[in-house]
Length: 419
Image (tube, rainbow, N blue to C red):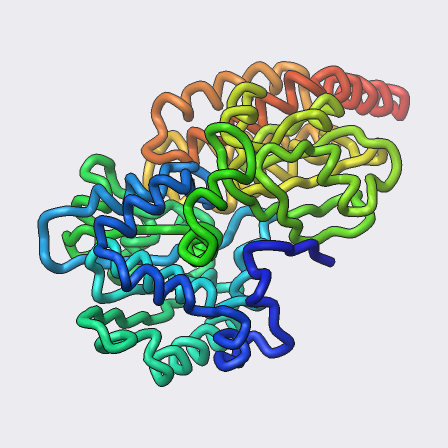
């Protein structure tokens, strides 16, 4: 189920790999427009549009492109390592509009001077690897990728690389390490990838959805894109909606749309709402007050969270929050790359305690110990993975702590009664 109105728009085809149909519906018109400008003018247009990264951080796209400087050899990477649980919007775009992403990459490469690009696809998406490779071959044959694109002096070649199934590789620096054949460990910033990325060269890393919006800007104009959405967060956003919702799927709405409006568009909540997690597993878990939260960067920060990948997981009153705690902590323990001790050890201790709680063997002192462990991880972990665990854990304990405490006490009572 989907409600895609803009990002794919003309690109929603019966056969997504039919490049002639894509072109007939206006495909690659944005690339034509961009090539008529100078690279500096292209970057200026993206800056005027207000487009911000749709992968989670929300960094202004135009500023990122502008920051690539110095070396003649530059790279562009499309981050399609979509490992955030509850997030599937990038997969949807790659399945239904691969040429749109490639067009966005070509525009980005022209603006930044990159001659080589990579699409790093999540290892669990082998069908996307195959279809995207076919789309690239078609685009090269038609003159939209490869040497001297559309008769210009601009050349840009794209390769697809398949990831190894690591969640941490969603971090752009870990992704670059993996692309270079190393273990997918994050590396220290600064220097940032725009200064020193692939093989020590300046590298732009953009998310699939971010690149998919670029052609819209050059087809309709920066003002058209900027006029949509909310102040500080212009444009459109793809939301992955799942859980206790009538019609799970990918939905596209202007930035600033409320959680309540999205839930209504998806057919409504099944049962009585208890909680909604926003931004993926690394995001906070909110109570019913979240229904009136506007979904944009500033509003989510004000609410104590982050927009993240735009994933929303709805949970009704049948859900036991002690079990949610266990699933969440187990995910972090399984996905920690192990590079730094605070995260490697801390996530396993959190998973151990959460498992004991969910299985009826928990102790009340575990809850304070879990908070203390998280605080250490926030201050000492090498990368955002270990630091982000505080969002789901503390939100669970702050908003649903009474329920978890009652569950622990109930299990203790049942054990004593059995004796």
